[in-house]
Figure 1: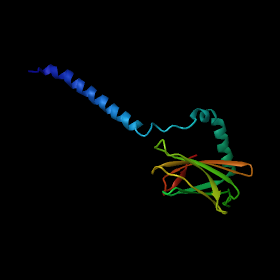
Figure 2 (figure 1 turned 90 degrees about the horizontal axis):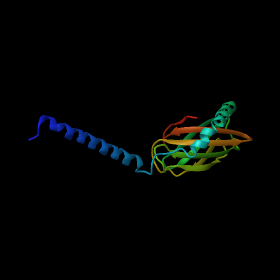
Figure 3 (figure 1 turned 180 degrees about the vertical axis):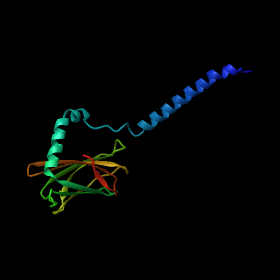
Figure 4 (figure 1 turned 30 degrees about the horizontal axis):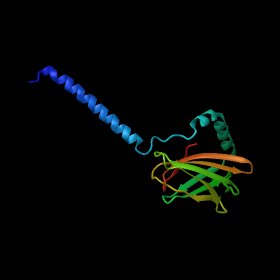
Length: 160
């Protein structure tokens, strides 16, 4: 027969076992798709923070505007306008993108102009949900960068 005080060690052992099991489950969930998403070459980007801020000032001085559409089939389209709202033609446009929540959903593309204000490409989407697009535009020696976030088929927000 168990006394009143003998339940205490059993209860503590049960709590510890439950904690170990919960941590094991969290570890499994966190690593089942290959690990956590990591920023590629993060240290180099951190060291180059001053040039990133200088590019932000250059972007503001140019005043270019960008809009994105991306459908679930991977058809990516960017609209580029100058400060006055006139379409930017003759630009070289490059985009890298990735699914924010997944390690294996990245893509990159050089976009081609439709002759007007839109630049497009077809990219391979591996996942649904929130994506990030990092855009680099060069035209007549000017360089413009932008970071957009959104979901395929949804609205895209300029975040940087």
